[in-house]
Amino acid sequence: MKVKIWSDVRCPFCYIGKKKFEAALAKFPQNNQVEIDWKSYQLDPNLKTDPNLSTLEYFVKAKGVSEAQAKEMFSSATNMAAEVGLKFNLETSVTANSFMAHRLIQLAKSKALGNEIEEALFKAHFEESKNIDDSEVLQEIGTSVGMKADEVKNTLESDAFSYEVKQDEMEARNIGVRGVPFFVVDDKYAISGAQPLEAFLQAMEKAWDEFKPKKDELKVSEGDSCSIDGNCD
Figure 1 (cartoon, helix red, strand yellow):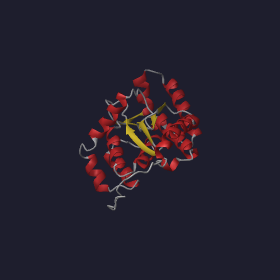
Figure 2: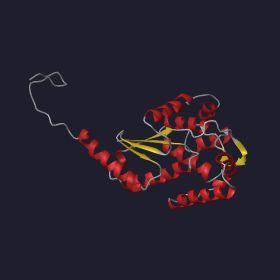
Figure 3: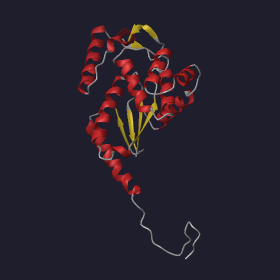
Figure 4: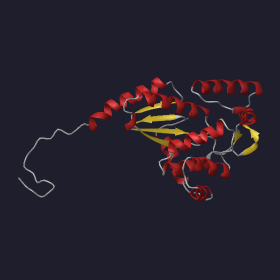
């Protein structure tokens, strides 16, 4: 059974949603038969990276709210994060375009390291206030999850995996995704947002009930046939 997850490492609710989903997955009896497929979805693709501009300052300018309002919203998200064991530093996180990070994610997926790179990038952005649009930072993150330094460097210095990022975003548009995180369980049930773990667990249980019969052993009615070793009876 497959779960597709569209997210952006700039989205605080995507990190919170990841933790809630993982908590649900830990309670799902068949979790060893669930494949996770991380999908790219870039928020604000026109955003220009500015290491000197904190996310708080950017949010005030972009959303047209006061600093007090922005801090209150950040505090709410930080408290939600704390409930799932995360320590956000939203006010000091770096304003950075996430396209290069998404290309790194696609490279990691090709190495079966999708979940590892997602976690590392989320942590770098939200807890460590690192610039996720900086090549050296991304090389460090890539190697920390087990990828080869030269392969990461070559990928980031080219346009490799740009197509895959765009394809994920096109798929999202085709199924009506309007925001992230967005979870699709076995192409049957969708969950939008960082919902309680019960919502994820219920969706997986429903999908499994429909998925399991396909995995049951076929009941065969025997007749005249030839076996794979060439014997015909």
